[in-house]
Length: 250
Image (tube, rainbow, N blue to C red; front, side, top):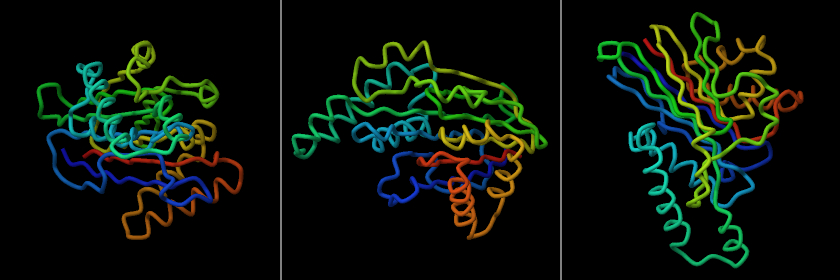
């Protein structure tokens, strides 16, 4: 199975890159033969404390195979302890300590693709919590959209993964574990909520997404950035951190 994957990201308009609170895995481009492939994006909630760190920990755990569907509820408490240890490793001002008590929150979508020569054939499965989304395209047609399928679903406050122990007890009722099959030439997009909402609002413009992200040259990131800025300026895209991971399977 040959996988080509490339991440694209942008902080909120007017903000420096240091304020970017999303995360993605893998951290760079992939273009190689693999037996299995794992990738993820996470959206750290901007109003919570140390959410970028929490988002990074979640995508790394999924990407390294430490966070999966079968051991989800045993790994999350371990990650929560690691997060707390890291953010309290040095003294914090009083106002940061107050905010720390509420913890960090993040949406997560992780994808696992298996080589067709494996026992289960050309299979994929995913884990999604919150409003980060996975889209699967085949021959230019959208065949999978999860966990959300309509733009108006983004108006509902999503359940997010919390860095505080005891706050994820009910998330079991709200996370999704979709699965399916892939064919040679399929494309998967993993997106954080702002871009996913835009796509579901204006699916007729989805070809722009394919054209912009298919550019295999050093200017691809700049092209993507200019495209996102134009969507923001036109009012078609909410000003939020943007993360997109494109995965092509052959």
